[in-house]
Each structure stands twice: as structure tokens, then as C-alpha cells.
Image 1 (cartoon, rainbow, N blue to C red):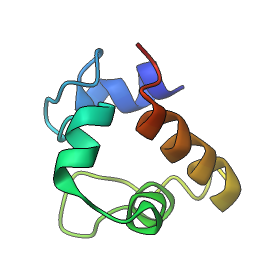
Image 2: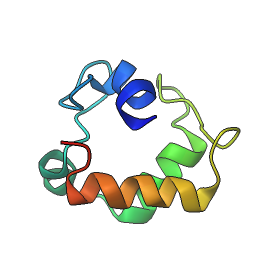
Image 3: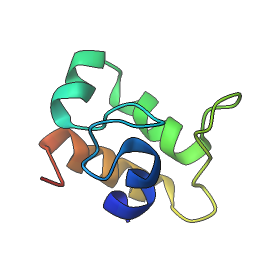
Image 4: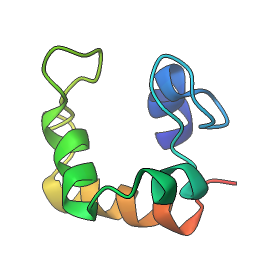
Length: 75
């Protein structure tokens, strides 16, 4: 899901596209709290192309995705 759905906007290698890069390095450089990243996935960002994923994911699932991205998944 991350590679296909997120990758359609953030780039198939998650190095950026319509949306910003989601690599571990890029996320650490942006220095956003983990909770903010989870909230962005779960609730989207009004006024931007980032949609809310709450219809498809639970908040714990969004947190799991953020944890994996911060670890460097997927390579």
C-alpha cells in the first residue's frame, strides 16, 4: 500500500513528487513530531492534495506506517 498508494503522489521510491519525500532521511530533516505525521496520514491536509486515509486505515495503522517510514521502510 505504501509503495503504490503513497508512491502515486510521493514518488514510487518515496523520494518526492507531487508530495514531499517520505524517506527516513527526509522525514528526519523535516523534524516533524511523529504525531503530526500520523495525523497527516489519518486526517489529510486541507487545502493540499493530501487526502485523509481514515476511511481505509485506523489511527494505529497510520502510526505503524509512520514507524516503518522512520525506520527506512520500504527500501
